[in-house]
Image (cartoon, rainbow, N blue to C red; front, side, top):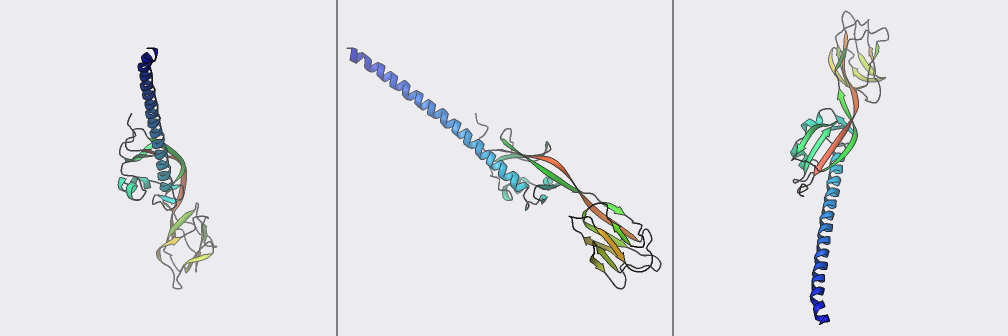
Length: 229
């Protein structure tokens, strides 16, 4: 009798044990799924942020240097085709806290922050007062300059040099507007060789100095189904 009465108790104990085991496995599986999802979200966010600031990205001047306003031109389609974002991923890109791009509605997700530089160009025009050396140094570095030459009287400009290198030449005299490429790594000194004295206004120079500032780029990615539970 004692053995018979213990069998039901043993059966109940086995049921409880199996149920507890299944519950533990289920909870562990859910936690593992969440951990995997977080890892995938982070991996996707890191990859997307790296592609956005990479040297070959259409929104950068060079690696980690964003062109001002360039992110405004990125579309959701660009994220899918150019940057490899999965169709089911929701993403938000912010620059210094301002949302500049969204795809889907990432209400949570995983965020990755990067410190970047934002580069912009400002237009400056000067009419230098050239002395006998006929040289002028641009106040700031610029990758290019537009030189307008309109000599008065008997003065001529036959050759223009940038840091000693010939960039414009016409033995009959230069007259008009010319676009000149410059090194972005050094300040440019231009020399205007010719005859006679140049007056202020005979040469006008328009350049676009580069200015950069630090900014925080945040990329948030939420995988499909990440808002469950």
